[in-house]
Length: 463
Ligand SMILES: Cc1ncc(COP(=O)(O)O)c(C=O)c1O
Image (cartoon, rainbow, N blue to C red):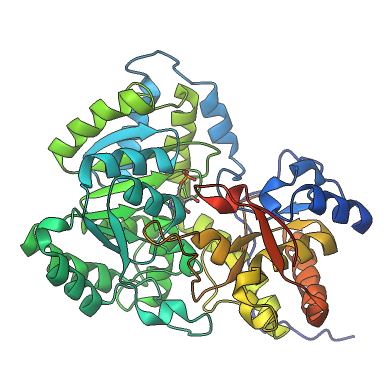
């Protein structure tokens, strides 16, 4: 008997599984109870009550055997740990920055950077906000201004580089505020809140050409810059034959400083850094880290954490790794697209983003449709996702009014090297089930609102 030949050859992950962690399936009655107890906030669920955990790709990576063995090489000296120098060397080799200050995670670096660089009344233009980044900018007295291209605010627009800066918007903000009031331009590659969308090399080069003559530095949020480099390799003319590692280094070379949450690209469970080419900034940051994080050769981390990071950085830039990582996200996203489920397009680097406004046109944004959608998915299958819409956007610090962003999304985030294709099938089928039940869905009202980063701890009940 002749079997139909597949139209293309399959790919597989460049690793095999050596250790497994059991996960628990619950009943839908259990999950309804857990959801009520968690105040309809997936951040407040206990992880033991979650079946497939797609809350975040942050710190949820599976480390390799080499990283685990690196833990045994931890040099836990208070000062001058060998692992710190290994990390510094890895950051310089792969990201290209001269100086390194380790921090416990990304927001530790954002805090220090904002305190040093931002003064009251400053304006910080950037390619869409990120929650912790913008909060630190605001707490330091600055105002973030979004200068991303308009396409980024439209979930259905298939622009290949929705993380690009709109150069006319950037020029306008600089002219309005005056270059002296712009401590830096804040660039993220990829852009989390836009749906994991990349910025092109050409666009970053153009941003550089605007900023450099005016003496305005560029600070990169390098959290997912390796994923950004992969998209450049796949989509930008002239980069197809270059290695991701080479593209990453070129990308970073157009910036002066970076903050990093190593819990994402760098394949570890904790860690971050601030890296820079500016000696003056380095010296100030190295001094300030002592106040908030720990000595400048550990920044709140154990020596072993820094060793795992150094090793994870080298693994993260391998083409085979990043192709499989993003390939898995695309596998899930394409499944959903085939079923006509509204998601942000193109499919992002670290997550598939469900378009909650298109899911639930009958739920007003003031009743948090994305928050509700994340709850329905959990109740259906025990799959945990998270809101990225009005709840995450919070309130304007000046007016106190709620911010209602154009994008009202649920992030279905894929941890690196953790789940299999079968898990992705289960997730896709659950989203389909919830989509089919969409007309019965109801919105939520907030019953408890914390002051900062409310999405982490807010509580809700059905509206
Ligand atoms: C783009 C981006 N920047 C910064 C951060 C903050 O990093 P951390 O969670 O390590 O503090 C995150 C975390 O989710 C992020 O996605």
